[in-house]
Length: 436
Image 1 (cartoon, one colour):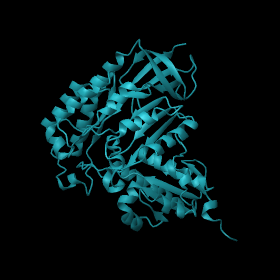
Image 2 (cartoon, helix red, strand yellow):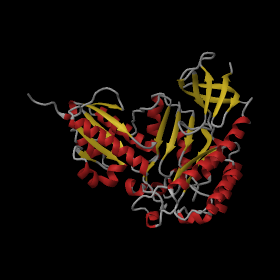
Image 3 (tube, one colour):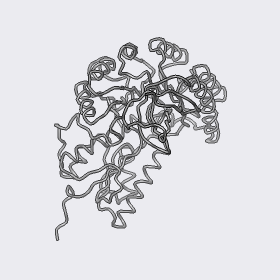
Image 4 (cartoon, rainbow, N blue to C red):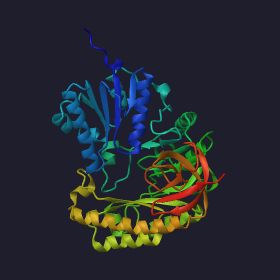
């Protein structure tokens, strides 16, 4: 009896890591389905073929990817699945080692080998599907990856090793993709890249994020456009002019600063110091009044002393950021910082991270309490635990504050915008009632 060809099998795609990985998976899923293959994303139904899109950014993410591969390798040994393919950042970075250690994997693919992966399914890369993408997460929110790779030399970061040099997508292609997502019901676009403010330098010989934002604002059906991963060094200030002018662009900016000590910023190879950072933040807040700034910091980088950390704490207290995330330094091989002594003990790293988040909790509570009595436009994301849960324009999905509305007292449709009056607040949540 002949076995079925691989393109006739059921395929399940598993995504690990960041939103940029998710977009890659959605592009792959779109290509598979466009070739008539029965593919799904993170389905609970049985599948013959598993594709794992891995993350290799920091130690915890790498371990999660390895554990996931091993789980499906065991499933293959047991005859539960027939084929196992691995792609993404971990595969790009450690392909040879992984192939030796986990021979159950039928093939490993790097971050820019989509056509080669498709060939395993006797499928062609369909250029007519460029700009088309199945949104797997939600009908009303979608990520838009505007470029690939990164040219920055940050000491701690392995992304250039896995993603290569910066490559911008053309504005026309991104507008086409946004239009496709809008036809699927997307109302909020979240712009992502390794470095969104570098956008356009390779294609247009200038930073062209402002022009891209202006073009995306013309897409019918898109109500909110949110900007993530804006690198502070060389920040194009014309972006702020567009943000202030265009009502569709959220008064929100994710700008990873990583530290406040000029000494540490130099060690991290960030190309900026504290003084210039403070000047940039002042300019952002002046040009876009009421903007919510989200940032992230790394504690425990080689060379970080207690004095450096205290300077970071004082900086956060002074700036009063609306949103803050904190990571402990991960010693990644082949990065610039790997040649340095990973001298800060893990216990101290965790203690510093906790201290910084406790400082931010107080700031966030104070800022949230000021919102009580005010009314905000809120996008409803889901129903959970007796609440409709949504977000204001100052909050990105999964990482920021949420607005909770009692579902037994009021009704809202998922994906709708409603006006909500805030009645109570905690450190990271707002409670409110829908205004009729």
